[in-house]
Picture: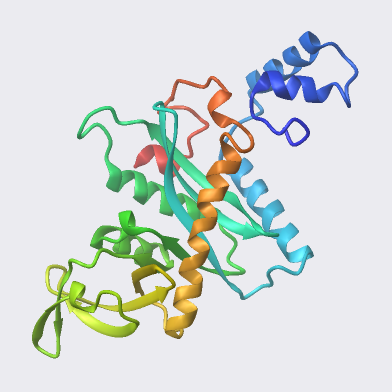
Length: 271
């Protein structure tokens, strides 16, 4: 796959010719037999092996060390209109590479997919495979800035920096406010979200023409929170690397999703 720069089995078979001097047809059959082998499963063991290889490689290069707090970028993507994919990535030598993902059939109508259960299964699976040598921060865009996802992060042991819409009603020192009153300003405040009945920290960040209001449970300075959120855009490049700018996952011709398959982790199937 690395040699051919593609997930398409035909391209991989052509790339194999450099190492296995067989015909295209013979190499294509090798791939088919490999994928049909019952010993090859996208299961808990594979995810743990992959995770260990990834973090060991980062430690060897001096990018991380035990005790570090690592930021994980989280977002949704799609594979054509067949699959909805929820993915986490981490920065590695100037790129953002996948750490974990879960997927569902792409919902064609309202109510077809339970987003809450998908996100719950995703965070539970992600926490399950991550090394306890480090702590982790979830960095995500406005689609995740809701009470439900924040509660899932808290219960899963993740810190978080989430971009949030500016239409929240707040209560500050007993006075009713709206978050949009602070738009286009650099600020740092703790306020009670009236509809959630919870206190949260909000940080306003201005960077050139860009402006974000971030919700976080971290105690770092406002500038550090802003720098952390800026890394979120790496996952967009990660998706490009997986698709047309890289491995062409949409050309794999995988169109079916087996909800009872052994390739779906147990904690994901239950949820």
